[in-house]
Length: 427
Image (tube, rainbow, N blue to C red):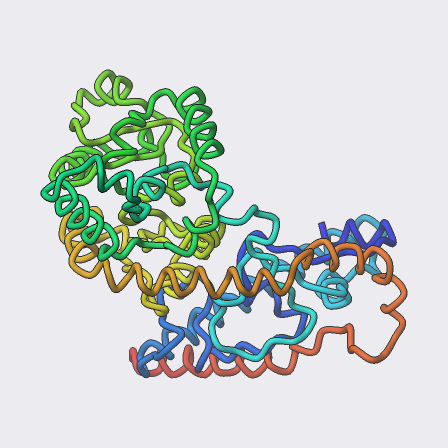
């Protein structure tokens, strides 16, 4: 697409469906030393890496460079064969005015960043209170004892009311800052009716009265693609949990019974589609189990919900690693999931839930404050590039060309030296 956009002679924004992947931003000359910056797609921590982990990171970095080299040369050869030899994809990418990331900046590892990188994140999403679908926070308002109440009540009733009021006020509500922004009960009740109508496969009475864990693995890992043993293990594990399990997937409970001959436990609700944002904004959610796609991670930051992550592919492992680095959840591998360790990890989440919630809420409040300072941020930069993108290509205040060949040659030499050394040692 980058090469084709060059033929249109139009202003182009480099927009990634990943966060700041090193392969994508190489052409913008963004430094990403594998000795300190964990590569996108790895589970390595951005806080600290051991020597062996840094060596692993170097090998991953070299793999990215080799892949990038093959990709760029293939595309350049293709354009040359079609009589467009002047199109050099990497140089064209380097001339982009800005690179737009779908991630929030707070989830970016510590690294040098230049001003051409813009973090759009969840900028186009409404604020959290617009998704609140629970009304329990309206029921816990302090009770005011007026003279008329006192006259109609005896002493014992007043004492009971005061004791109840004290218990309510002493309980610390999670995300009180979010629920305080929703003061209109009618809006929430209307939203509840809409959800009941649109998502009739969910037992909303139970959702509004019991704690629940939300499970979603995106569009990749659907139930009909999971092998029988793993599906049976997951259902058995979910059936042991004290909370309701709301599992978003492509099969209903009846379909699972019909196709796999497995009975879905009574505390598990399986639905082909669920309102993720409304459930994340619900008062009864305990935590989320997910694959760690960048959209889901942005939503976790928006609503301040802890996560138990099971990365499946691509950038998901590094997305979740950043969340874990900030103390807002736990991370397990697909191998551990297959080995039946989900119950153990859910127990660990439950034991440390207060700490995860505390960190998640702080991250959400930080992001909310950041967005309040950048109202219209995404719209501004899109319009700015549309107006000035082509004009600034001829300006020299920013060097719009790829400078990474020297760095690439260095790492290729290191890779070559390691390969030769390994070859010599093997004899």
